[in-house]
Structures are given as structure tokens and as C-alpha cells.
Image (tube, rainbow, N blue to C red; front, side):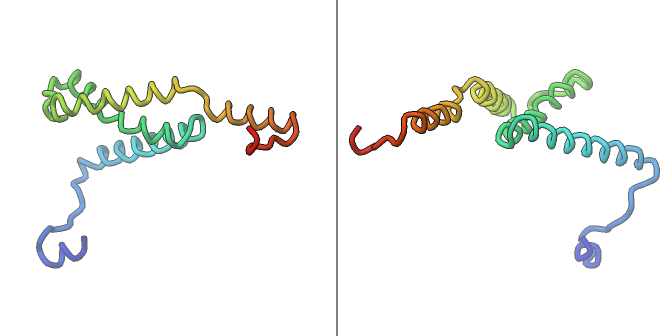
Length: 122
């Protein structure tokens, strides 16, 4: 940033005072989003949180369409919305998958209850 300023490529200056409330709102929204992500990681899992976080983009585009009536082409048209649907499908599949970890734990408990199982003679 300093290099660009000193070379005259881009001038660094503070925003006007009239825009400070927008910056404050943006900072508070970012803190709220980061906090909700931390809570989501604690409640669900890091994988689920990292997969669902990009869904904020299509949600914001729907809100923008409702509030301002802008075109959905800003999101990439059909391909962008298709990507959002694929992400949503991935979330649904992750939530409905069989609990494989639990099945492995039950199998390990069964083996310990029955004693040592020789896997070579099975």
C-alpha cells in the first residue's frame, strides 16, 4: 500500500466522514459473521461450516434481487445459480449420509467384547 502511494500508482487517503457509519456497519457485520462461523464450527463441524459458508453469496443475491430488483446475471447467470444449487445439494447429502464413524466404533466395541479376532483366518 505504501509502495503504491509513494510511486503515485494509487493515492492513499482516508474516507470522508460521511462514509464512516458504513465502515462501522461493515465491521460489525463482519464480526457477527465471524462469530456465527465460530459457533457453527463448534456446533456442527469445520467441514460442514466451510461447505455452507459460500451459501451466503446466493443468499445475498436473492436479498439484493428483492430489495433492488437487480439482474441475476451479476452472479453468472445459470452457471452461478447451478453452482449454488450444487453446494446446497452437497449440504443436504452431508446431513443425510449414514453415520459411518458410529458403525466403525460399534464394530470395534464388538471385537473387544468378543476378544481378539484374528483377521487372517476370516
